[in-house]
Length: 355
Image 1: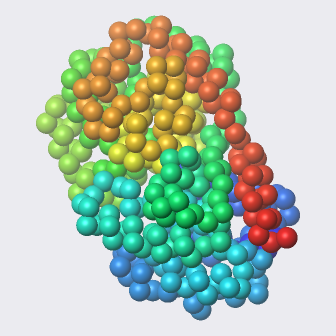
Image 2: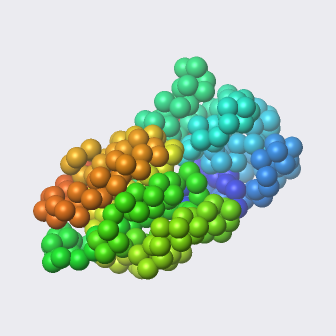
Image 3: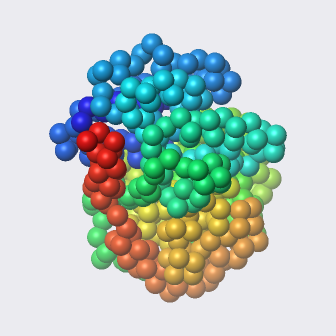
């Protein structure tokens, strides 16, 4: 197949969505498909709506099929209907903007645009059952041909069960908590820090791994909360970390916490499980598709500081439970599809439109 793959910006951007895109492109190329990445410039949402960027940059005769990362939807929803008369257009959906926490009138506007977009494509690849359910809600059940293709967590190869168990069974020490995600409000870092303020300072350390340049106003709020609770010595910011360094970072922590308001899936939950870390997420979004509450981690309602503090306190007070849940996490990870499984599923779906 000759495949055009439309994205905003740089394919090497550090995020779960771009990682997913890279892995799928890698798999398709390994099967002999020619994949051409088409980079669109991202402006603000309203400028993107007016841009019609695909009108002059895509020669449809060069491709058998187009895949669009749904993030670009404001730039293509009007021109897709023309493109779709010439070749199949497939949307790859990581997260719907219209299901984020924001005022209703803003969500209504995003829903209007995303509905228009979903009605302009031939098929849809969705990254979780939760995302599929959101798509069905948007389209009131009138959804194009679609599949669920789960993200995978096999992004590292240098961990073993024996190594991980030895780490989780170390003697008395502070609970080492890992937050992996960009520092934006949706990811819920403020909830985690409020919960930590209820614990004894000597009992924990927190590493925050992710970009801090996306929402400077929110980052400023985070620093003010840390200062308010006098937690500067307990918390470190590492910034984004490359693969090998990130693998060691997972190994050197006990649990991973990402209390997002709306996490479509969350590859980092799976990555953490591979390294024997129990994980804490929220009941909103796709985390509940990986986290078996009470076995490999915990699910809390979004924003529930009290429950989160309770679970963290229990990990500190019951180290044996930490070890057992860590082993369960590894078992859960091993039952999950690999990137090859996911890539094969997607490729078979694409062939339906090109054969």
